[in-house]
Image (cartoon, rainbow, N blue to C red; front, top):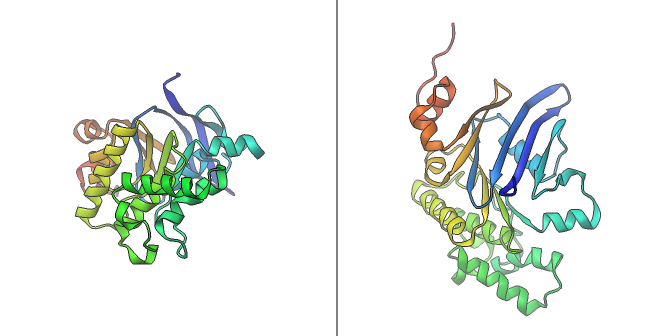
Length: 253
């Protein structure tokens, strides 16, 4: 469909003889906040890496903005990657650069803008995430929550159509995490950017997610898809119900 910005068909990930997941099929619609969730070891981050072309699938295909990124090379790959942004779990900022310089890195790599223009764009992106007054500070001089926001600002440097966020709330206190959730929903609403968020943080999932898929380590694939609040209220699968209701799952004898 024209409104889908990501289309995944029967995707599988394997490392040697170990299958992480298989038969994963879903789509992401333009402008929504889409969450990839599940317990530890289910393959959430592996799926993210497959989507952005860092590793090839064992089977199936993932198309991002119409492109299977793992099969693009050279200039077509660079052009496709410029249309997406990625924030890794710890922000992955360069410690020797201040926040403005960090955000300007993608602009230096992918544009011919002069330094003054790059700095202006970087400051504007920092302003979007509430860090306009921290542009000259180093990563070591700011809090964990600010690092996450700066990572989002850098991921937004090239005005991407899709932002991929890897565990944005991991390691944050509840108040800081709630503020980050609010930032994500605000950015999605005000900029029209599509967000794909990898997380296992239940409160964040319910706060930001328009739709989600749930991966399961034992099933080696998807066990749920839909609106997270509807899954919380109506799920019949034992693991899905236990996850969304924070219940202890009964173990089979």
